[in-house]
Amino acid sequence: MVNRDNTQRHTPTQTLLLPALRLVLVGFAALSVGLPVIFIGAAKFSLLVGAMVVLALESRTQDRAGSLSGQWLPIAILTALAVLALSMLWTSASSQQAAHALAKHAKLIVIPILVAMIRSRREALVALTLFVSGQLLLLGGTYLLVLGVPLPWLPTRTPDRTYALFSTYLDQSVLTAVFAALCWHLRRLIYRPVVRWLPALVSIMALICVFFVFQGRTGHLVAIAMVSMAIMWELPQRWRLLAVASPVLVLAALTASSDRMHTRFSLLAQEVHVFAANGVINSSSGLRLNLWRRATQAIAERPLAGSGVGSWPVEFDRLEKQHGADPSVDLRANPHQEYLLWGVELGALGLLLLAAIFGSAWHDALSAQRDVRRAQHSVLIALCVAALFNSALYDALMGDFFCVTLGILIALGRHTPSMQPRAANPI
Image (cartoon, rainbow, N blue to C red):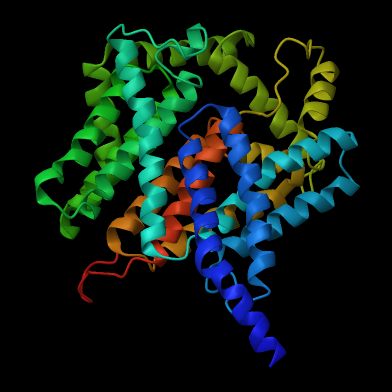
């Protein structure tokens, strides 16, 4: 009798306050990845604290938190974070450096939190709408800058902020390329045929922005991957083997039509040649190649368990001095490649854990409705491509964007019934 009374006492809180709290926290996180980094940090902190409050309140009622059963990704993420935390026992970094690096890796926890906090299709669509609103703010602001319209709330323009609102052209070009893919694959979520063309138009405008406005080569490659995957999925199955050539054809067409892309990729070839011949690192490509060289050397020294979380700056500084270089010239917080970062910190174990995260995300998307599944797989492919040239999960803005996007899409897939015939192609 007492237990029944306690349950009834907390039912109004559960049915009114908790859903509203969850929706506010999830919506803020979704919108924040289109805003300055300070808002992203506030949204992550609010989401983490709010999730603990929701779990504590729901534990006193009959209904419990959203189930993550059947999902492989939360297990992979928690396992990876546990191993990273354990590596503090053997890391070559200081305790402060290790804790800082672990906190940056821990943004991965946003994915399962969002999946657990979003309990219905309506909530997932609200989160997706706010996410799209933030990305439209970035895209619209970029076009206003291109047209010469001053935006007084933006930070001072610097060369790497050309036409980018709250970050550099590198980050925003990747974000915009992924946003273009999402608009294309999720365009059928709009039920009114009169405006169903609008997401396709936004997708085209976003791709124009990536290819002809921004100069980030990583963004170009991500966008090429997104276009190539969209082409493959739209082709009949008997023609999909021909789609293997689509990235090369898209790259050739864009290089011929875009002076900006032609210049940037020509510069890439020159920078690589100069580094190979003379070891010059005062260029974007030379800097990355030097970082990758030191990272592979660090992995070769400790190939199994790595040097521990947060060890990259220490190992880089040591190897630069060992080879007679000045570490102050190009010291970076990460080696500009996610795979090498995990290899330095955790060796082969780290690479297996990162592969498990990517593989689990791919697996968990397979049961989603076709359009949502394609959107999830597109984001994952974009992440894998971006991780080849940047620490795409470790970096502040880009990593937060990928985590929030995957969390929303996974939740949307879990609450979207499949409308495809049983005989339909699952890919």
